[in-house]
Length: 185
Image 1 (cartoon, rainbow, N blue to C red):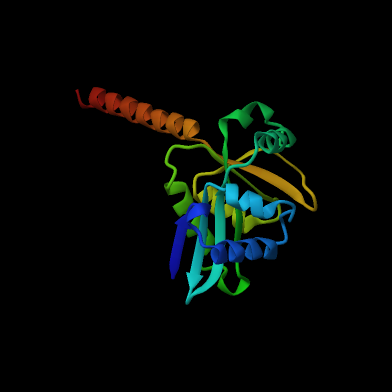
Image 2: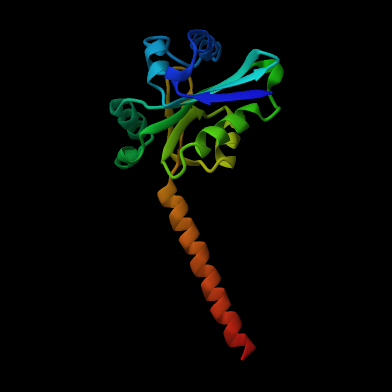
């Protein structure tokens, strides 16, 4: 098992070609300007088994117009300015699925960018990817909407929300400790 996470400029032409072909295998992405969008990604993740590329994902830097359109369709257009990065193009060869490859790839990509808000979209019938996103801290955001072929759900990982959640936990703990002190007297 070998994971490589690097900027597109650090990838060989062969790696980018293999990444591109695997994105197309997922049959969920418009081919139009895909090579350019791969070059513009922040990070590409390539997972190999015995020198064979079997899993991929990327941390994309989509255009603001695309982000605004996604958040608007999900009914949360007021939130689109908080997000500049998208997890996407996640695909694992069928023979290697259910082995944690996509989950590990996504966790690694997120860990490279601590405390940055990230979004992802996935088909509403892709419960496996939804589960992977939720296990990695994403939450369903807004309503599902009609995509090109399927219904789509927006997921967000917001460090604003994580910080608020941690503050609430800390406050609850402090209250509990205060009550505990009162009971000990």
